[in-house]
Length: 135
Image (cartoon, rainbow, N blue to C red; front, side, top):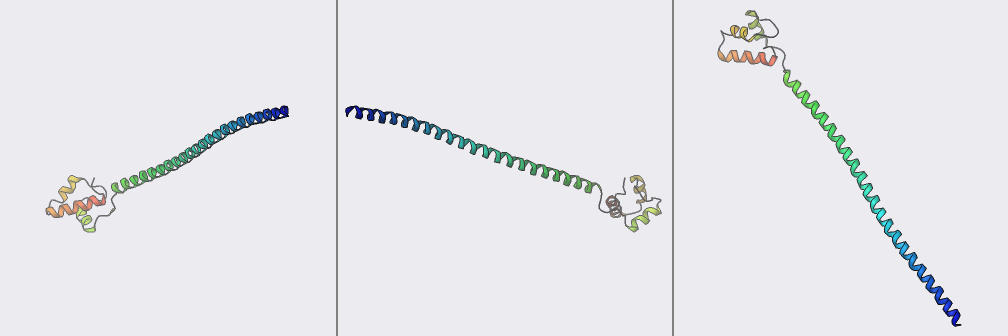
């Protein structure tokens, strides 16, 4: 009977050793799986962040293009006056002095406006400037 008890004790000890090895192997696998899960979370966060950066870069590009278009439109509108016509009275007065339609030379204009008061000359010149007729 002692022999049987000894054999059972050895078998139990061998089984215990195998169980301890299995437990340590499972602990290692669990630690590796946890580390892998953390890496996957970091990778997915990096992908999400990269996607968001790409979206923001695209929106920034669109905003810059729109801003450039608006600046170009503003520059064009500043260079071309809104009013292109000269009042009839001004046209008649200039025609009497031999100044026709189109760009007006400033010296010729000053000679034509010599008979007017200072305020009238300023008014006529500002009208011509708005119409884009002064060269």
